[in-house]
Length: 496
Image (cartoon, rainbow, N blue to C red):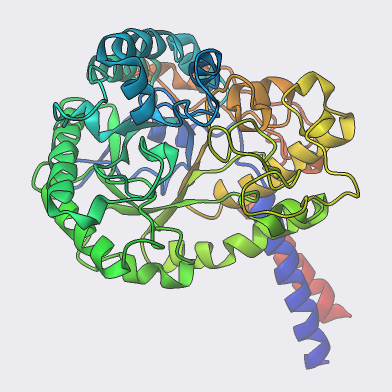
């Protein structure tokens, strides 16, 4: 009898845990939206930015704007194919600027900064339930030497973006996305090739100088900027972890010398969660770990089928949720709907794909089918996507958000928009239905009282979607109902 009771209790506990992981908060309860609309006053009257405990960070990256990436806006790089051999064309922002020269590079980039992201984009994201944006910026916006081909002038456009965020009610993370010498050798650092960041102390000093200026900018906008990411994706394959931690501690001292309560955000350097304690200090306060979770940057990942991709989500995140509960909070700072590497330039300008076996270093195609072609569902034209593939994209995103939205501090989708990469385009994904909408939480600071009257969008998680209408508590099991169910189940078991 005791053994049978224990077994029933175990099964019941597992079912309740699973249900609690997938249920969406009650859209009729505005308390979370109200918390999100303003700072929480602490007991001493000062403000605190510890809001992720009350409402998840639901964010989108404004990537490819202030540090250009070929796959986000390929047209900026395709122009060179008319005048250059493909092997000599620019591959990153460094060579883009060097090839054009400072005057023409400044002209083209200013037009890009001015038009690629607009206030309408931010307003649409807020309407879809986004409450944060992450803004990647290269160091050269703050610390540029004459011998470097980069151009500056980004800050005034960053501030325009911050002004829009203030008007709309979005919170902001400023992200140092590229460091002098390149911290990882990827084009997303501004300079593709051999990373040289920690080979010269001058690079570290320049990184800290740029970070100090970015932090002071953040403090000028401290009603909008809530987080500082000190460096994106420093490579553990190139730099010893202890050297990266030394930089993290130097950066922490500098940032905390300027602001005490802004989130201090560090990247996991692609280490597994069980090794993350080596990257953090027990002295840090108000800190977050940033991890980037993709399932398409190695041969195995692109070769598995759709069901395995969905199952892989829980496998990849089980230790992350433990770290979030036992150490500092965790944010998935980048993820997408992509499970293939067919996207043009996703592996770098001029590079092929693992999927078709055309990437340098691969000797055969890697995909879950007999024929691997970057067409149809795996092409750049979303109008050619099958209904089956669209349903998979929705299920895959839902599987990720079940964890990122409910079990950790939050998430940032990569990216807000692209020219021709559908699975990486947040705005397109929402419009096409494979990315869910959430109730609006972004409330302009001057209009906080309106939070109760905001139109609430229906929140969907695939097959878990309730048929009830928005505002009716759809998909929600209130805590008192859960307790009642538990007590009733225990009573029924005891009677049996």
